[in-house]
Length: 298
Image 1: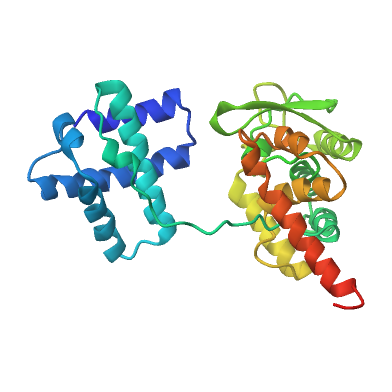
Image 2 (image 1 turned 30 degrees about the vertical axis):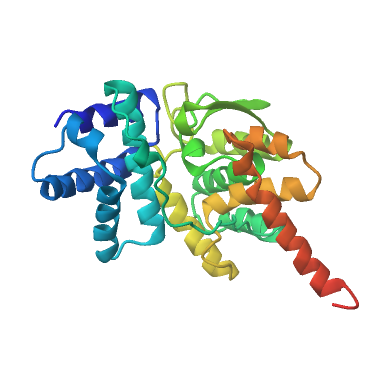
């Protein structure tokens, strides 16, 4: 069927969704179309999609539930189907109002799990002691410093080009969905970048990566995640102390020290303020713990 490839091309090229999201939608919708072929007795066509009823979609979701899918996976399935129908309406005039009223399981809000200010500092400083090569030690310190000091995602840090010496005052970052943002760099971040750049034995230019692996190729995320795994073991930190937790910590600690929520939204590159507002829940939770521990009547 040509409908699915056309939809996947649309979300990859026009909507510029992340590769992982496209892969998930591909798997989900292939399962959906396979189910429909047996359910309606023929390969689904534009006409079939226009005539499907809510109970047909529920039958598919129930089928997948029996296979052991979690609430989160069921919700993602429904999201993929609704996105597909939105595209069908725009591209082929398929109107099916029943689909719009379908609701999936309500997922509990998951608050970010930042590390404390002390733990963030310990992660960065201790990372320097794990590597024998000075340039590799400086590399790890710099990568973690960018995540905590500038709020970068691990992919954003590892995608940086090599022409960042001397370190600029502002980084131009292309984040999820191709959204571009400007991130100011504090002196500690710039200093770490310049130390690493001086020690790095490989060529650095606009055509090369900023962060290199041992063999002279672009540093890969699993290498850095492995280092953080070793670090949290050495420091006695929980499994939630990941590279991405440093980005959460960047936002949470800014908020705790009086930063404006809109400013944090801009720095993180969130399209919606509601995404950034989860950090107010984190800070409120922290304040409750402090209050319970410190108040004389607690």
